Length: 82
Image (tube, rainbow, N blue to C red; front, side):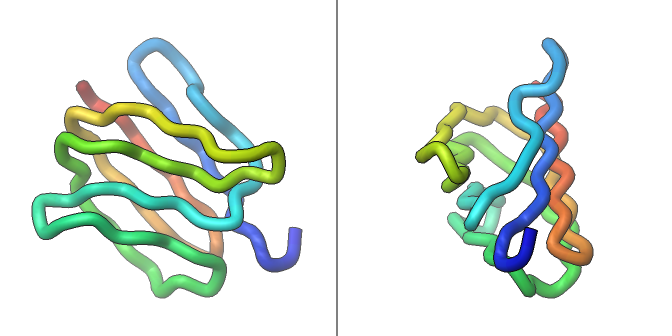
């Protein structure tokens, strides 16, 4: 989809979300950040905070303890490890 991100959020209990998002907000040790379509490649660790996705059907939020986020070519892979 043009102007969107393809997002996969995986946790120990399975896939939490897989699909399109307009933007994603997460928290790293350096602070809160957002990923929008066209974002540069990025690999970030995630720390305690809220993971927020703006999806076509509305906001989705999940509390995060720790994990990793990878952005490449408007595709996000988010692995929640705790």
